[in-house]
Length: 365
Image (cartoon, rainbow, N blue to C red; front, side, top):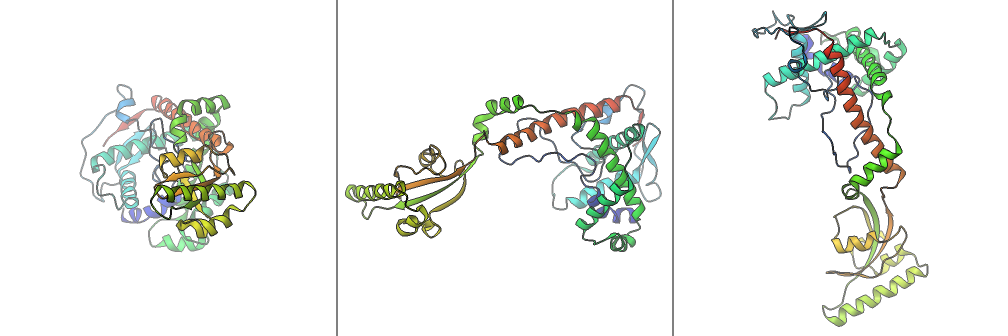
């Protein structure tokens, strides 16, 4: 058992993410409007989005529970669940929990041991069901696919090749063959889920447009823009001083409209710390500037110069360098990814429930 536990860090890293087809990542600027779910764990060949409890899905007569027994090395291989005719052992459950704990060492609060036992048993059952389904569908993984995936993963672990990796794990009591078997199983399930779920999803342009229309206010709040400015401060805090600053700012704007270089004028005349950078304010998110200044900036088109804008510091002449828009191709692609993920999770849950409903599952924990 100790050797198994020592090998968890290796196996967890190698197998992390292999169970499910790669899904588009969630863009940080987009609010998640549906049900948020955890990322796939490294310890199970099933996405934990399917959080349905085994106890809630089995038919009458399919589940027989037994009292929990003492767990030590003498009983770690006892069977705690049977999925159709496939056994899940206590050792597998313990390994999953130990792996989770090792990957989350900084978590001072979290689920109790009992909650973890129940949750990870559900995940192991889902994982076994998917693998059985892959075998029933005769899904195969070619040796070249397995080897390519294996090499890529051990490189991320820090090994240059299979021989070097074998030396690293030799003292841990785990073999290359056992790791490859688990990796092959994960790739097999990956293929099956892609076939049963991912390839049956289609996101239309009309759905993207509808999402934009329904969430425009929220989405626009996350867009960014890039701007420069020239700041002219009043020499005295008097009406005359402020008027002189406004006139100077207006003259600078006129020079810009006639073709003067904005960067050079900013370096020569701006009285802001950004002068040395040609007045570059960098990429800004909505809400980082004062509302009245941001409003003036966002009225501009890229390359356009603003009228002098007054602030407590003086008068600013802005030039909008670039801005994100909801109509941009990249934004629509990100929204397509979001809608794909929503449909993916829904279809995955339905599919998992279907294969679970026709299974015979006995829990002995």
